[in-house]
Picture 1: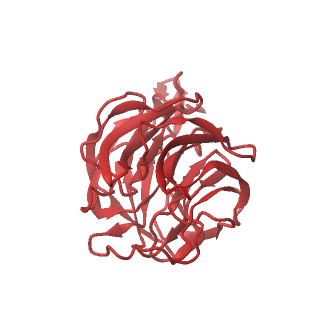
Picture 2 (picture 1 turned 180 degrees about the vertical axis):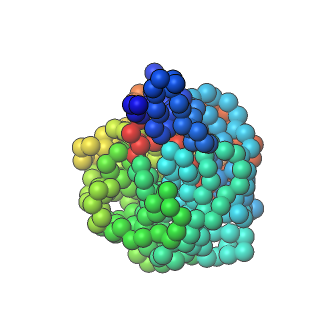
Picture 3 (picture 1 turned 60 degrees about the vertical axis):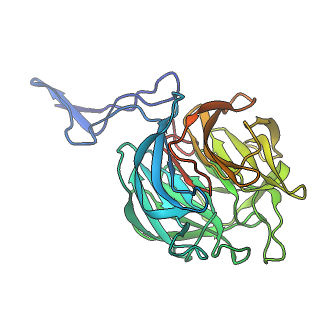
Length: 355
């Protein structure tokens, strides 16, 4: 009797095809495949937007798309309660939603963590709590095994900024653990992206008090393998907060935001090569001057789900880019609900996973 493992089949577009998990045996009686719900898995490449708001109402609903195919979003399920100002992180199977604000705590954030199974439409489940307490508007970063919340604030007005980095282990429910600190400015309304070895934090507020809420163009990074503080990476092409970011394994792209001192929404996108510290380079433009959408990606595409434009005009627009090809965003489809307010973006392919 012999044993072998069947690894993932990777399609030409970078998505994963049917996979056999576990040990398969063969002998005189033929091949015996493993049984159980994880024995076979089809293509990955799903993106989910969770929570957010339609101003002034927060949302509990979640919607999903298949990122490889432009189309309108489909209902996925609901969070435990309506939330906005969320942080999302994902493994290849689980999407984790951290912190946020609720209708029962509109002036203060919450410390709860919940999760959903990305491949199975349905509601969310309790995961644990953030050990640093309540947090909203932190940057989400994902490795293959851990999800990170980087920076945040504890109340709806400026102030009480948190420069800590906390992490959870996707496979095991429980409370978060401390990883390190953001060493540079960009403590809230920042964006996160990742390679298979690094987490990158882009832009955000640099303020330490309500009187100093200015944005930053700072980019900083940390290594997944070594707990500790971030290190300076470079600068964005703009000073911006309320930004989002997407990435494949080599390139990270910042999308939109609110620029200072111009005090204006922006349609600018810029990119970095994550293995090499340095300043960002122009990438192209969004469909409009926009911020506060949810980022998702597969191996080739980055997608913004939902958005807010000047005048608090919230839209149900979905738009995408090809991460390795600089250029302007393209229309993807529409959400079921108008949605902004920093919803969480969850996806089962991203730069932190080996494709």
